[in-house]
Length: 596
Image 1 (cartoon, rainbow, N blue to C red):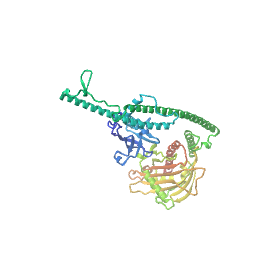
Image 2: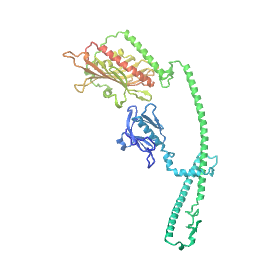
Image 3: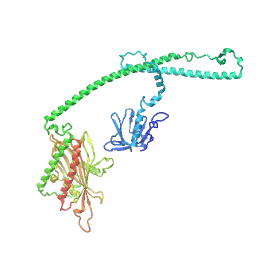
Image 4: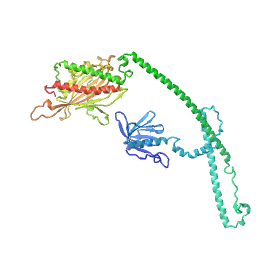
């Protein structure tokens, strides 16, 4: 970071000519939002104002924001040694310097500008020092009030009286200043005339001058006699009268200030009593509220409607999370028992030829499907680093799960992206089993029931499904269009790519009900088949193929639940889902012909 000023001393930071703090400019990192995070900005501190620009080169286009530092609060961060916050009312800037030394320099400079911003600052006192000194000297002569105020006057009237005193005092200072200037001029003229008399004494005999022009002193010598100036002889100013009036004015100011302070003290005592009463009322109300909540907890049975999902639920986040985790653990145990007891019947689920899956279709949702496919394809190739603010939350072998935290109206809408690599299967096979409803319940353990609402084409259907309830969360249902597509390669080197997209739609045969909360989804599974050449003349086997999976999920739960719970459940369940599903595909395709 480069600054125009790098001093830490308040004396060095002040311009000796104007008495104002020097300008400071440099690069600081500023928090923008959850999407872009910290961004470098050119920050300028000048004339009690903190401004920032996108860069130093763009200063000519104007600043992007500014803060007046008169009432600013500067807060160094408790843990981050390079960060400090500047807040004015509801506006807060989060800033980071490159090191603690630069942070200290910025904080000291901002505090200096803030201190020099008001009338009571050191610079203001220096500018008005002569008048303040004159007032203090005059007020020290007397503490007796000559103002005509009454004790019953209100504070507003006293402040108006102070304004009047100020105007009178300014006029008196001007008058006295004129008198002092006239006195200084008279003294200068007197010294000039004395010099001329001494020159004349050297050129002419003293006997040539009449004795009446000289004054004989005690030593017998002669001095030139000048008529002294009378008290009213200089511009007609009565110095003694003006001094008395000046003294009376300053005494009146002191008395009025004393009365203002007395009124403010009384008001402070009155407001303090009111504050104490309000604090006591608040304490009683809080005690009554706690008592009522405890009574309500005693009367309510655990698991009742007051403990259901919602922002006003009586169950706290920790208990909510424990309950959800316990319910998920029970479901996992039940599923393991069912898998070990049941023998899966072989299902004939041969996929259609690739040509049937490469067409767009002519149904009413065809354009929407095509738009969604293109968006997911573009989204899948985006990097997870940089300004996208993705966080790696799970890494297990070839599988990585990324999350970006997003909330809207208190509801968690975190986009999720997962990458995985599975050996021995093709992208066509993975997408086929993910899309085919005939085998859905073989690998999907969170579904309670589902049915196909409408078949739009050979590769597009509308599905309604309800998910198993995990207490204390409400039960969810989903209505979505599911389509499978083969993505045509752009050139001969592109790998075979398949895609399944599931996105929420509306349908008259599956309207929302009060029994479930309708969730919204936009999910895609994109699979690419990578083939390594076999040795010699051997045919391609499953040992030579691998499927690269990109799984993208955007889920709106449709209702409120604690953010920490939703994120913890997503972190736990998505990796389990991917591992369970890919293991199922490997099991189903083992020993079978490869389906490209």
